[in-house]
Image (cartoon, rainbow, N blue to C red; front, side, top):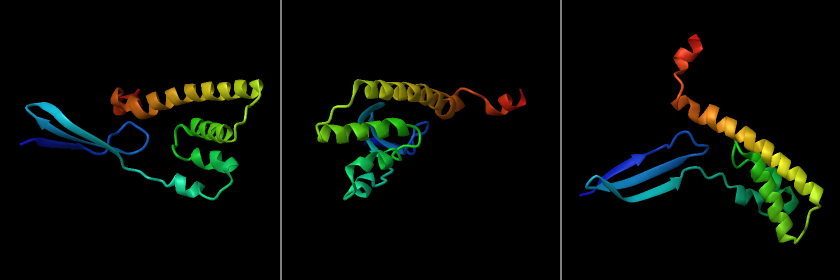
Length: 125
């Protein structure tokens, strides 16, 4: 009979994730992952002006709000077959680059550094 292992929650990520595994003979034979957080952003957006989507979709994640906002704006632009000026694209690229720097620092120092740093000893330093 297969042994079942459940890891819930998966930590050091933004959001909630659960992993279920079946193990036979020391090997994982089946695995399931499931997101454990549903916020209903799609339902909130129903019936609203599409130009307001960026305001709501950036609330999907507390860490990467910028990219969710920009992607939702791009989705509306694509749906309406709009092209933005080159300078606007440059500005978006700079916003995304700045967010990338911020995101890397948050993920390293906030979400994963605790795996590498002894906080108690660091506070004594």
